[in-house]
Length: 87
Image (cartoon, rainbow, N blue to C red; front, side, top):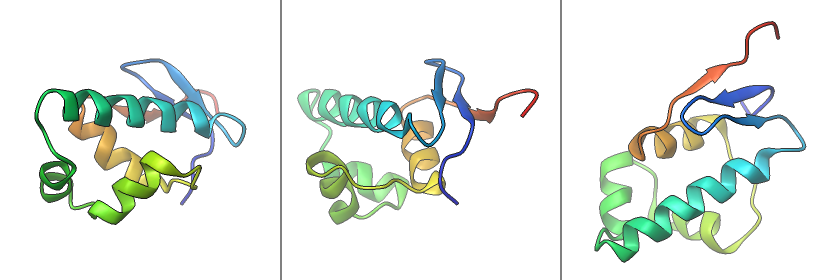
C-alpha cells in the first residue's frame, strides 16, 4: 500500500499523493543525521529489516516509498504514523 492521507504525528507532516516527498525528506534527514552520529546504513538495515539497497535508493533517487517501509524507518527514528481523523 502506498501513502494516502496519512499523518506523521511526531512531525505533523501530512502525506497524500502530492506530499510523499515530505516524508522522504524526513527519512533522508534522519538517515544523514544517524550517519553523522556513527550509525551506518548497515546497522539501520539490520535493525529495521530494510535492505541496504533500499536505503541507498531512498537516499539517492526519488523513488516511491511503500507505507510499510516508511513506517519501519519512521518508527526506528521515533516517529509515529496514524491515519488523519475524518478521512
